Amino acid sequence: MENLQAEIPRAGERRRLGLAKGAGLYLGRYWQLYAMLALPMLYFIVFKYGPMYGVTIAFKDFNLFQGISKSPWIGLETFRSIFKMDSFYLALRNTFMLNFLDLVFSFPAPILLAVMLNELRGAAFKKISQTILYLPHFISWVIIGGIVYQVFATNTGMVNLFLERFGLGPFPFLSDKYYWLFTYLGTGIWQSAGWGTIIYLAAMTAINKELYEAAEVDGAGRLARIWHITLPGIRSTIVVLLVLKLGEMVQIGFERPFVIGNVTVSEFSEVLSTFVYKMGMETGEYSVATAVGFFQAVVGLVFILTSNYISKKTTDEGII
Image 1 (tube, rainbow, N blue to C red):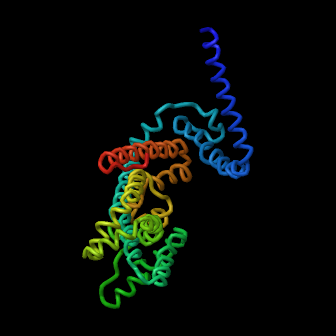
Image 2 (image 1 turned 60 degrees about the vertical axis):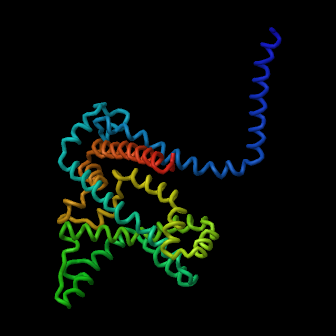
Image 3 (image 1 turned 90 degrees about the vertical axis):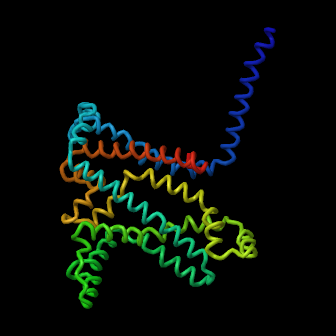
């Protein structure tokens, strides 16, 4: 019995040594792959995980000259002051509003484009169409902002000059908050819809072509094939992207509202990203800016976990 009890630890030790030896041989055999992985890992450690230490600024009375470590702790006082700011609630409301409208109008756009491109039979025309639709994604928002002002300016914009010839203008596309909202949404769809089609077109290539042939033999029209074959075939992709989009409801890019927005439409264009920029870069309130960023991260995590849970309960698909 004593020999058996002594043999069990030895067996476990031999197993661990065997695993360690096997891992060493594997690392030695494929060391080039691990060497290639070192740079991406270093990038994430330095630029993604390293800056997380800066989150502590949200809980400190940060002084630029004292640094993060020597600045005094103040607990949740910064968050209390933020939740008393009317400008914060305005930015939060606009963030939710613009993201919700983007979800309603911008999210379906690449799906519709992908379906239409998938139905095209002319290979040359299809490639040209894809290229034209993808190009706006590679244009900087600063350049897009200049284009928007050249096209939609009230007195000198191309659209208003054209409409004035028919006695229909000018329209305040950039100076009235409601007109600006349509300009904002339309510009976002134009810039992002073409690029988003890549994912859906890639998902459509995995659909079995025999399903289309069988449906055509059974007399199903083009719309019926799209509804019963194409859309169900990319449902999992739609669900994953929808969950990710819902997780970003409190996150919003800085460039688009900052470049297209202006003082006259600040009631709609002031969002959390521009609020953080003004607090951090213009007024030097680094603790406030960090606290708002931390608030966005926490709320975004709650949103994405909630939407993933609902998605799994309703469609049995999710990202986690």
